[in-house]
Image (cartoon, rainbow, N blue to C red):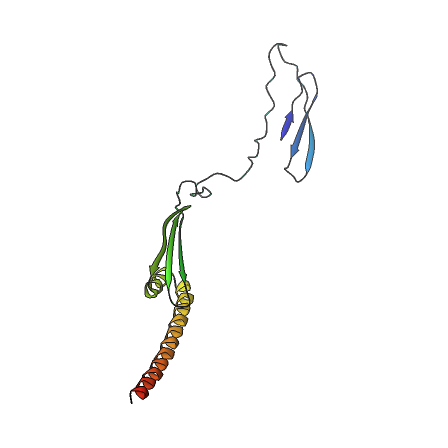
Length: 157
C-alpha cells in the first residue's frame, strides 16, 4: 500500500491500494486544505491505514518445532538372501558405523515385530520362503544320502 500526501497548499491527496498479484484498486481522497495559523509550522500528517502484514501470521500455533529439534540420520539396512542369510549395515549420516554384520533370521523377525506389524508381515513371508527352500534342500540331500547308503550296501555285499 502506498500513500502519497500532498503539501498543505494542494487540495487533494492520492491513496493507492494494491492487493498482491490479484488486482489494483485506486481511490482518490479529497480533503480541504485549511490554512495553518503559522506558515512555518508543519501540518499534522494524514492518518495512514495500518499496513497488512505479508506472509503467515506468527504465533504459538503456527510456530515450527523443526528448527529447534535436532535430528539424527541413522540408516539401518537389513539384507536377506533366498538361503536365509541376513546381514545388517548401519550408517550415521554419510559415515559407515557397521558393514556386513551377519544376523540370524529369528532376530530379524523379532525386530520387525517390535518395530511395526506392517514390517513384520512381509519379512516373515521372506523368512518362511527361505525356510521352505531350505527344508526342500534338506529333503533332497537326505534322499541322495539314502541312495548313497544303498549303493554302498550293495558294494559291500
